[in-house]
Image 1 (cartoon, helix red, strand yellow):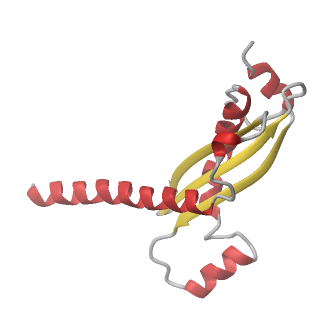
Image 2: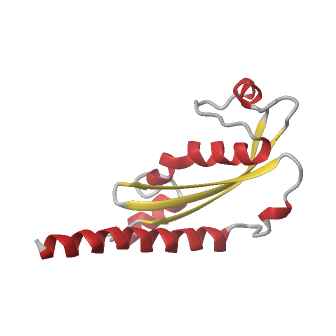
Length: 142
């Protein structure tokens, strides 16, 4: 019983610790840390996820044209902890050339990070993909 409790708390806090490391890496690698001073119509979103044992954090900046609902993704920062990598050379190739295997976990929260950035930019909470201009306009408040 005690062993099970120790394993539970170790795993629980390990996830939190890895999450904090990933988020600090995301903030460190973001091109512009002054997100409070974004131009009108710009927004920033953050999303975290776990897939296939990899911990991923994404930060995205978007620009939303409030008159048309058109969204332009300005930049995305991705930080990922892949855990134990058996073939580091293969993992490097995946990241540099074809995002296959090592690059796949980041896709799980791409929709969420863009939706969160759209909400930050114009207040529209979009829940369905694709996030078309019509959907953004209809979700805008007022």
